[in-house]
Image (cartoon, rainbow, N blue to C red; front, side, top):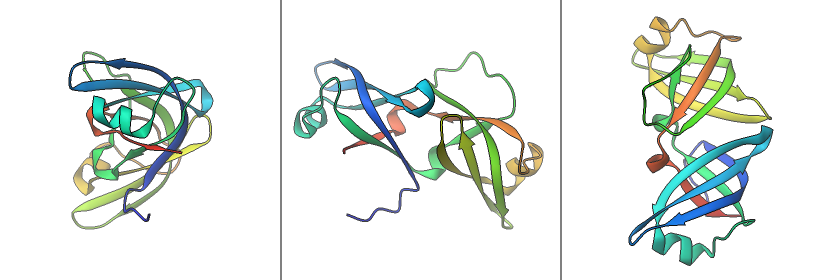
Length: 140
């Protein structure tokens, strides 16, 4: 199946906490980092997820926020440090490629104004922020 989702991060399920309707799935990704996905309990069952399952974490580029410094006081669970490898800016939006520690590459789609205000260029250290509710899982 082809998808327009730019960010596909391979990993292994490290743990699952299941509630009546929703579940949180912790995924070990390269570099010893962990992502958390909030998905339905039904999806966990249908995908046959359990600790040790191989998965791909899928994140739309529009759901990746960027910070150029330490972040505190946020509920966002997924914080991946990396370095900007490329910025392609248009009049309204910018596509920012990020090399995340551990060999993962992400794309963030942010406004051109935000890219300018953050002074993003190749080599800029950033933290990619992704809400757990914006992470989908695909059984690998």
